[in-house]
Image (cartoon, rainbow, N blue to C red; front, side, top):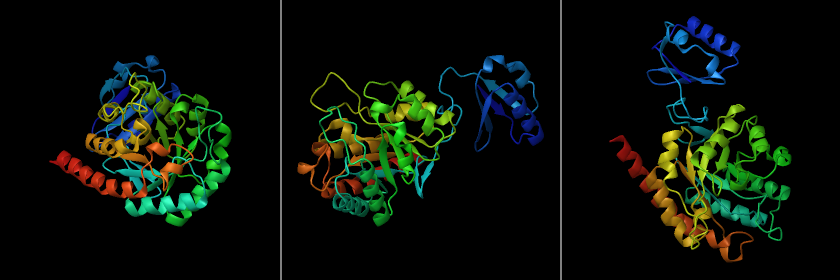
Length: 338
């Protein structure tokens, strides 16, 4: 339920309303817009008398909503959420370029790639320490040692870091990580999501291989309902009948998720296609569609990468792509302002 307040509501009356709602075990999310204040009510609102609320002097209107997700819903939060990651802003017109290797292999590798992507324009560094793999015989990542190397690259370059968590038991190791990534396979690991709801860190939540937009937003709701509203949604490709590419990149997710939710939307063209030669085209398509950022795999020697080499750009290819994305993004923003 959404309560639309009249302009400049009396603070004492507002406090009384909020206290009354809380007595009914309703959680109240306040959204301050340019001209209106909205109260998003989460809980069993069936116990509330809508007519009674409407009759209050400070209330302009009351609306029920049908979607099961509340905190992630744009109806509750009309303005785009902007997430600040150690000075790097994402969403609300701020664009993030996240780049780095699929898997951290050596200190020399991660630092070399980190320096290269930063020089090319990336403002966040990705690198996998814990790797969920289809085969138990594939490289599973350097785990704790990988995190240490990633943080060395952060210290060397100053780039905030993004890396994936696979299990709740690993959470203590992520204390110095700037953005915790939840991979596609864990999108509905609800115990992990609930725990991340109590962590004061941005979360990059990837859409599952066969999950709907609503299911993705409900997973975001798990995190946000715990108090952590710093969630970024990531489209990384969905499974289809076509086998030529690794997955199918759903570019339509960008406008749809922006319509349904206020959260930033990031596109991963590397996992979506599985082919490095397609990554630049898909990255530009995502930027043109209005994505709030890209997460791209970059490796200094893709032919010998320990993981996902075929979908990784070289540092040179990334350096060629980055200014094109920046220029296209500027055109999109300028056009939206006209």
